[in-house]
Amino acid sequence: MNYEQMNNNKLQLTGTITQEPVYSHEVFGEGFYETMITVPRLSDQTDTIPLTISDRLISQNGIEVGDKVSIVGQFRSYNKLDGEKSRLLLTAFVRDVVDESEIENPNQIDICGYICKQPVYRTTPFKREICDVLLAVNRAYNKSDYIPCILWGRNARFVQTLPIGSKISVSGRIQSRKYVKNLGDDKVEERVAYEVSVSKVTLERDEHSSKTALN
Image 1 (cartoon, rainbow, N blue to C red):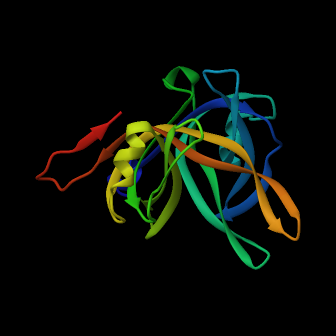
Image 2: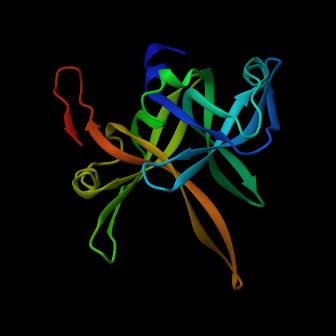
């Protein structure tokens, strides 16, 4: 993985492991497990985020349910078949477990990618401006992660004007929120969505141009 691919998707989290790790898959003899980490917000609320972690990191650090851990890694996506449809699932991929003192912010993500769908701008009944953006973030081996982001206020107004293919950098936090999915035939299902709540956005230009930033 080159320098750019290492730095266009950086994540740090500090929280509590709230689910027994479940085996997911193996890569070159290294097993990976899925669990959940609950991260407190500045308010009384929390975000519970899927975590993918190597069996080696689990054993080296003695990670168990109820443990408070600090991790660094990347926010990744993958497609999973759900019946005849494919669903985009998101997970915090752990590169390393670190000392809490090394983490300045318990929920911080910085990503750089390309707008791959038309931004969706809207206002709430209380006139709050929101814009939903899907970013394609390059990864090694010609892969990409597709990361949903939500922007507010003047950041929302700024991004809604950008065309598909624009390269932007965003900083913020991962948030989880519940929503109700209409399945048809009067059936509904409660689901959880994960997205980057953006506090700062920068339009990346070529190396001979300046950057435009909002925060």
